Image (cartoon, rainbow, N blue to C red; front, side, top):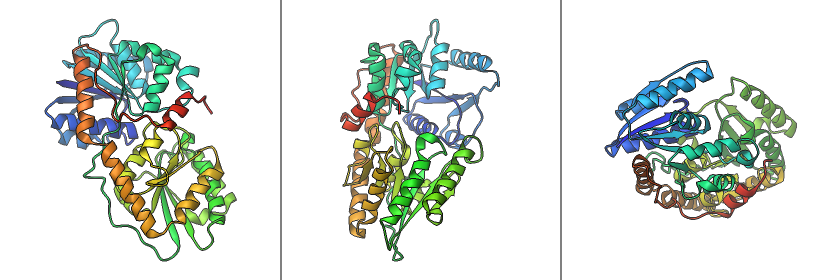
Length: 393
């Protein structure tokens, strides 16, 4: 099967990382895979070249011309099926499919923002009629699409993120005798990642942990451009107001996330909304307990009290409570949480199951049939249902 992947750029974002992982895995299974992107950014380019995947970048500063260039690139490709990730590339692929096409089309939504489909972008859901199938990486996102566009029921499949469980593996447990507890966060400097509220919560937690030093390392991109620069400045100010400047380290993009995870006691992600966050999946696979917002499919990713803790991202008190609870655990209890995190990760991110699901959806689309594959994983957590029904904050 010839598969053409479409995305905005080959930068270091989570969606780019995930589509790249799927593309490389499909290529290794013997499929012919190529990439089309319309912005530069070669973070993953060498990885694709090593896997024999060709990349074509069509660039234009004019949005209309860019759409036409993507349309030409897709319609000229001798492909069986197009797989597009992220809202704008999906829209471009759907426009390129009109008025008719010779290839199958699968689009993928990755971010479950409460109320976005109903309140701001209902026409985007309607455009999915053009596609043969929609893949979401969370049950929450699937439920949102089906609620906004009931005609899509039966054409939306949930497939959890593919994860390299040989790369993301546990290391030696971190043990410190200085009272420090190291938490790491990985995320762009963006409002939806909730970083400013986290600073306030950190101050609250620190006051409740006499004799311990909760240290936070935030690693993320976009700190040198707007609006990331402004958000980072707000984080610095909030940390100073909370009295935790010496407990917070705000850094740039991290290329060796495995080392970051392994050198952490826990990973924390306080996002207001998420789809299926790579950082939670990866840290869990590394045997690191995770503290994260109880939104989207978090109820599947983190087993509350067993592999980490869930909290309300809109409540500084709830975030602080999770930090205090974890910091109060003994080293053996933290290690047991890490073991449970790895065990759960192996179940959720089974490569064979995920690739079989992708192949089934792509083959059905190439044959212009409705997908018949079930969801992976099949369990729908309460957090997904609750978030799907929520209005925008």
